[in-house]
Length: 302
Image 1 (cartoon, rainbow, N blue to C red):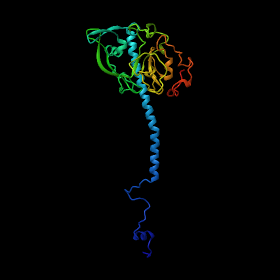
Image 2: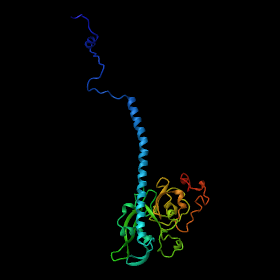
Image 3: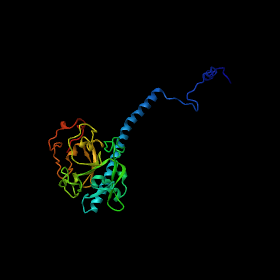
């Protein structure tokens, strides 16, 4: 029985304003401006955290690859030494340059080719991941640039060596004080050269390392006045470069591989007569303020 009264709900529906306590099925509720700003802020924070971590991880991976390359060079050098009565390179030969034989030291001219021809093709370990792009100004590389070679020696089918023209890139250099065989040179007496790795200084004598040239004389002058100074003007610029977070990598005559801080370069035993207590070492009296401005942030030698 009807009481004649109108319920509030019915009145509301007749008035055209339906009462709803929940959204209709399929209806979407949009984000508020505040919620969008919160999401954007969270994403920005995550990016700020993740990007440096990604960059750092990439550099760490590059450093590990570089050290792995140098370990491979150490294995090749050790293989050569083992097969040659424990001696480093000692081969003075004739290189046929345009049909005119000319005395040359294979070790100094193109030691890479010795390994390429005797032990296989190892081009994949020539380049540090931090310096794969060739230099734009010729054969000399830079901190993040590879050096470029255009000519080298290669074993001939009939025996001996011949000079060949072949472009190749590299990020590492070899210590030219390792091995005999050069013509007499007052600036590089044989008495100062390393002839075998079986010496007590082996753990501090660098063999192959990050370098702007394929061969490094291993005689350090003063530190370069600015970062990426011209290696042709400042000999030390060939190795004193911030390629790996304050240092370079090297394999030593005991076949160990490690990072060398830039200020520690002057403490390495580059050749038999090299003074490891020279003026640019703590033992030689260097002070923190003596270093060029760009090097002051790096660790001092131990």
